[in-house]
Amino acid sequence: MYYVVMKDRDIRDNLATEQYLMNNVEFNEPLVMFYIEGPCIIVGRNQNTMEEINPDYIKDHNITVTRRLSGGGAVYQDLGNLCFSFMVDSDDSNFGDFKSFTQPIIDALHQMGATTAEVSGRNDLLVDGKKFSGNAMYSRNGKTFSHGTLSLDVDLDVLTSALHVQKDKIASKGIKSIRSRVTNLRPYLDKEYQDLSTEQFRDKLLLELFHANKLEDIKAHEYIITDDDQKEIDKLKEKYYYNWDWVYGKSPAFTSKKRKHFDMGTVDIRYNVADGKIADVQIYGDYFGMKDVTDIKKKLLNTKFDRDDIISVLDKFNLDDYFKGIAKDELVTLFTP
Image (cartoon, rainbow, N blue to C red; front, side):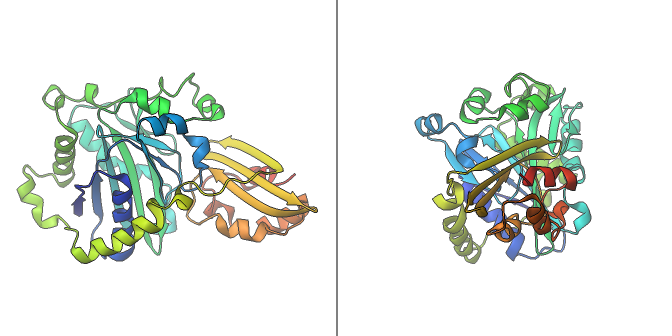
């Protein structure tokens, strides 16, 4: 296994680096990447950004907002959070299998005293039944990365103020508020790890993953970002993570909206219908899928806003590639008038 430790504290730079490493650097073993950033919100690829955030609060508190390549829901991070990303060669069978990617992290946390840490639901890590980590996944050209958060000492009051969580998602968890569901890891670690900084916590996890005693012992496995790498990373930063259109996108008015929360994520379908045909369609949500729903959106344009016509378009796709784990008949009901 190789590793990369990012020194940058801007989420946009770190996500661009992750994207570059996945698509442009060949590793003959898995790669793990660790990064830490200042206060920020990262929305999932398919989410409506303005509906996931509290814009006034974010502006007043100088919180960075960006969008990632992977699906899933919006997350808040600050310097008390550690992000990890595993990059591997992939096939269809391991997409959505978060347990196989996160188990090494769970095992390391058990060694540090958080013995009740576990994988739960589709993509969460819990300790004593409370969430301390959300995870997402992205695949392209035979490569997959699975990345997640680790809340060591995040300001949870800011988290609950900065994010706008839909009521149906909260209700699906059987809780009254997002604040009652989340926690930090620090209180669950053994006493010798209670005072670790986020950087020290990262280094300890790294050693646990490599079964090593000193960082010097694993230096041969470290990948250092080169000047040439950085030039390409800078291009990705501007194209995606600093790009207003990528982060926020357009949110036009719609004449039809249907939304449902499934066990494997929320799907929100919005149509703009003109003269009986679909003039525009957006598919929002925190669902996961190997393929980009843009494929489906393009085929739906100019289709009659009619159940049979819409189904004839959907039948051209393996919907599980776009909405992992959600039954086709339930999706068809959501897509059709």
